[in-house]
Length: 138
Image (tube, rainbow, N blue to C red; front, side, top):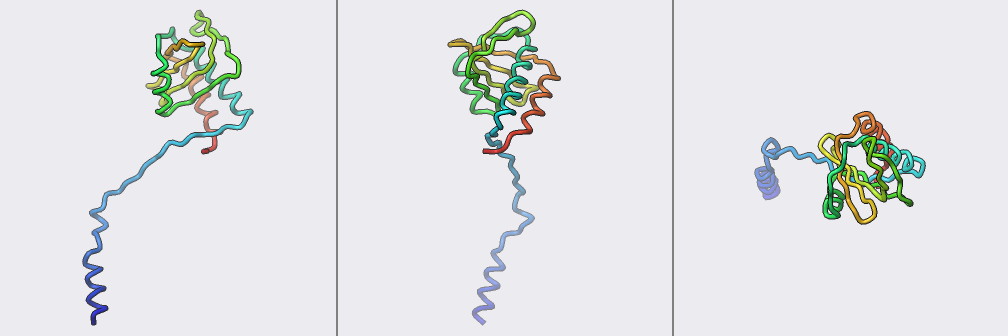
């Protein structure tokens, strides 16, 4: 009889599942890329950067703050020289593409200076997104 009373007591305190909220989350993780894919992604990021409008000045703080958000970070072994927007020559030591790209930007480190770019070509952006699919979670 006491077992029945305990069972009824436990059943009476079980929470109503309909009253419990549904909760889902998508957590972003770091992706790792094979060597051959890293070269392709770096080249795609450079093409995307080369299609940008003229830059605005930026800071190391901006650069570092983007690293705490969804981003792609490319650090070159040797600076890559390219023409941006058809006119500006720039040597890129490293760059960060902030996601989502429709509201993001590209911040570039050139030596000790930082520049911020936006308004990139959609096709280059799309190509970069396709290459990111080759990444594997760390």
